Image (cartoon, rainbow, N blue to C red; front, side):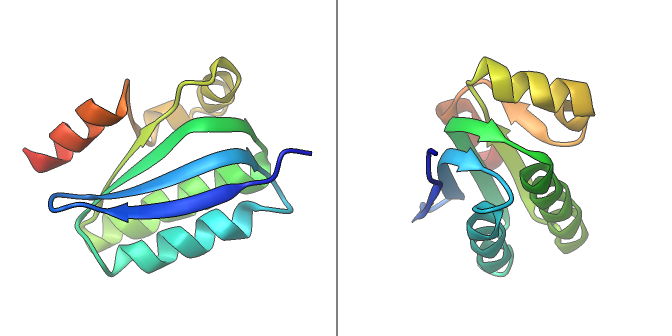
Length: 114
């Protein structure tokens, strides 16, 4: 089993939450807790999911809840996803229309800076 790691990097213009590994029922609380902390700290969050290898329904629910909370708080949330598997899950569930997806980290950070 591939564990999940979540790290946070604060920049002048935005906060980047780096997620790596599997986001599932056993690990999704790590992502949830990191996103909850950032809601109060910044107005722009980029969720770097380039190294996520798997996301299950628990992880998806964390993303939906975060998007809803952030929207209500006026926080811009963008996600960067490269894994074809994770992108397919996002498309099948319709979350690719709920979250703002960016093709790479640079464009996501530029978008929130403008």
